Each structure stands twice: as C-alpha cells, then as structure tokens.
Length: 240
Image 1: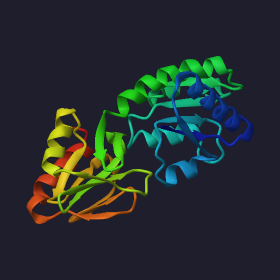
Image 2 (image 1 turned 60 degrees about the horizontal axis):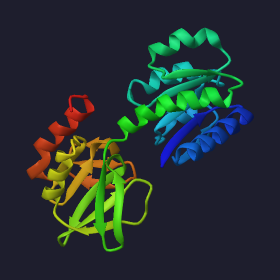
Image 3 (image 1 turned 135 degrees about the vertical axis):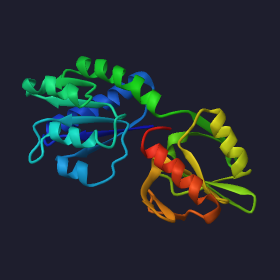
C-alpha cells in the first residue's frame, strides 16, 4: 500500500486525481491511499506520510512552487508531480526536482505515463521488505514502515507505522540488526539495550531521547548515547 498526497484547492481536480489513482492501482495491482489537502499551509504545518505528491501550483496563499522549494529543504526523495494550468512555471519547476508536470484538465493517459515514472522512484525509495514470523503467521513488512522494535522478555515487539497492534516474535535485537544490515538497510540505529529505531521515523531529537512519529518518547541510554547520536547525525546529514 502506497500513500499519495494531493494538494489541490479545486475539488473537481482533486477528485479526478483520486479516481485516476484508483484506476491505475487496479490496472497494475497496486494499492493506494490518497489524502487531499486544499492549501500549502496544511502541507507545511504538519507531518504527512507520502510516497508521491501531486501539487497544484496555483494554490491560495503560498503557491505550490514555493511550497516545493520548502519541502526540498528536508526531503529530496519524494516524487513531486505538479498539476497546473500555469505553463510558465515549468522551467522553474525542474529547479526544485519536480518529476514531471501535468496540465489541467489532465487526461488519464498523461497521468498513467507519469505515474509509471513515479512508481520506479517510489519502489526505489520504499526500500526492502522483511518477513516476520509471528504467532499469527508470516507478515511481510516494508522496512521503511517499521517505527521501532523493542525487546521484552526475549520477544521482539514490532511497532509499525499506521498500525495499533504490535507484532510479537521470538528473537534478539542483535540478530535483527545483523539481518537488516545484510539487506543493506542503513536507517536503523540501536539506542538502548531494548530499542532499535528507524531513524527515518524520528520526529524530534533530544539530548537523551528521541520522539518518534507516533509520539512515543524513547530514552537513549548512556551506554549507546555517543554512538547513537553520531549515527543519527550522519543519517540526518545524508552521509549514511
């Protein structure tokens, strides 16, 4: 399941994009959830999980082009597709790393062509998947959706973004860290004897703790503090 964010103040245009996403998903066997925002202030004022973004340029208040420039200060990966009737912005759009442009009214064939390009980037960005053997059966989980894993009484408790129920599995954090390293995953960091976190899911960093995107505060213990903070800083700086 992939998350699409549509930032569009025209209800008809937003509904069209939602219907196109559903049609594209049915044709290619891909699941999408779509969230619609009506202005850039909503986009910039909160955390919105998204794998692809459709951004109208002619938004009220902060226009889509200026919003994209602000987004790119913190996120260089998400594919941004501008939806516009303002062709004069095309050249400037490529300076903020726009994947493509669609001119209103958008025909489905144009949408499908651009979504095909976007999916190649999305699949690269979403990372690998890991299989979790739980008492309820096998689960295949995208590694980027793992919020953090904690160990309690020799059981791993998996906290997955967007899910309220934990996945429980026998195992150790050390073995899990080694498994993730073999998959080439570099976004996970051990911050205590009982917590392995996904640095891509950190909302706020404090001197002795981190707050995850679900609001959970996790303490960075003294034994792991120096190495953990160095690893987190390298991750934020883009060197890992």
